[in-house]
Length: 300
Image 1 (tube, rainbow, N blue to C red):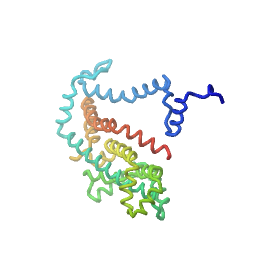
Image 2: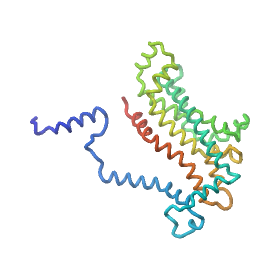
Image 3: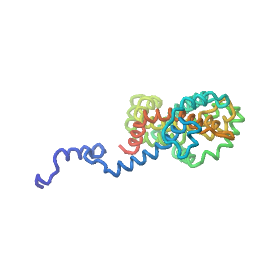
C-alpha cells in the first residue's frame, strides 16, 4: 500500500488510542441535530422546575391572571415565611426528618449492599445462586403489595408514627445488592482476592482494603440514587407518619396541599425548598453517576 493511501499519522494514532481506551475519536463531533435534540430534552426537563419557581414567587392575584404569568415574581420570601410559620405543618422539622432518614438509609444501603454484593460475587458458599435468584425475584414484587403487612408489623412493634418505621424497612435494597454484585464481578479480579488471601487477609480486610476502593464509582451512583429515592419517598411515610409530629418533607408538602382551598404558591414554595438539596447533590455527584454507569457497562 502506498503512503498516499494511509491516513495521517496523527489520525491513525488517535484512532489507535481510541480503540485501546474505548473512547470515541476526538475528531468525530456530533451533528447539529444531536445538539438540537439534547437542547429540546433539556428544555422539557427543566420547564417543571422553572414553572415551580414562577408559582413559588407569585401572588394569588398573579396566578389568577389570563394569560398566566411566565416570569418569576418577587414574593418568594413572603411565601416561604408563610410556609415556615404554619403551626400544623412542621415544615422545618420535616426537612430535618428527611435529612436524617435519607442519610441513615443511604449509609446503611451502601454498607450492606456492597458487603452482600461482594459475598455474592467473590465468595463461594452453598445456595449462593439460589439466594441471588430470590433477591432478583423481590424486585418483581410491587412495594404496594407489602404496605398492609408492613403496617401491621410496625404496629405490633410499636414503631408506627416514628422515624424508625421509615428507616428500618429501607436499610437494605434488593436493587443495591444486585447492582453491587454485577459491578464487583467486573471491577474486582478473582486473582486479586486470592492474592490477598495468600497474604493472610481476612474476608473483612479484603472487603475494606480491596473491594471498597475498586467499587467506589458504583457506591457513588448507588448512594445518590438511594438518597434521592428516600428523600422523594411519599407513599409509606404518608401512611405511617401522617398526622404525627415527625413528618418527612413529602408528607409536609402533602399537608400544604390539603384542605378545601389550596394555595399553590405555598405548596410550590415548599416543594422548591425540598428540591434544592436534591439539585445540589445531583450537581455535585452527576459526574460520578455517569462514571459509575459507564464503568459498570464496560467490561474489563
